[in-house]
Length: 134
Image 1 (spheres, rainbow, N blue to C red):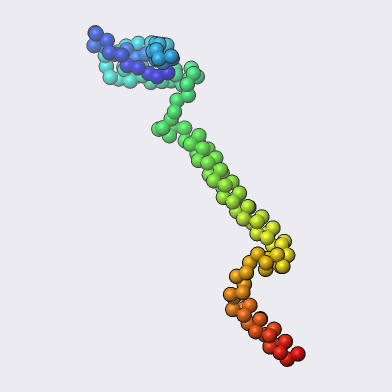
Image 2 (spheres, rainbow, N blue to C red; image 1 turned 30 degrees about the vertical axis):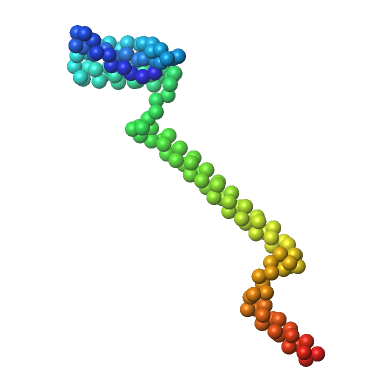
């Protein structure tokens, strides 16, 4: 439903609430006619109020008259983002915990890059020195 201004032959403008269903327009309610811009604006406001109270279609409010709903929507969406972030963080922490429970042997067999580390080379050299002494 929406408010329609219909120009008449007499020069006045009628304000009606129109509904479109199955490709056909149907006048639901007439709110009168006026020649002056102020009268037309008043009739349009009455028609818009009637549509909001009638309840068939909710009006989308882009003028931020319903700031509370906008803030609630923003809060809801930020909570979704937080859940996604926390979900990823939780997954990472859980994976790290599970990996910390794996035995050292398994980790060494899976990761052979330790052989390139300077610390490993120093330990290996120390062990070789020790074995030569024995």
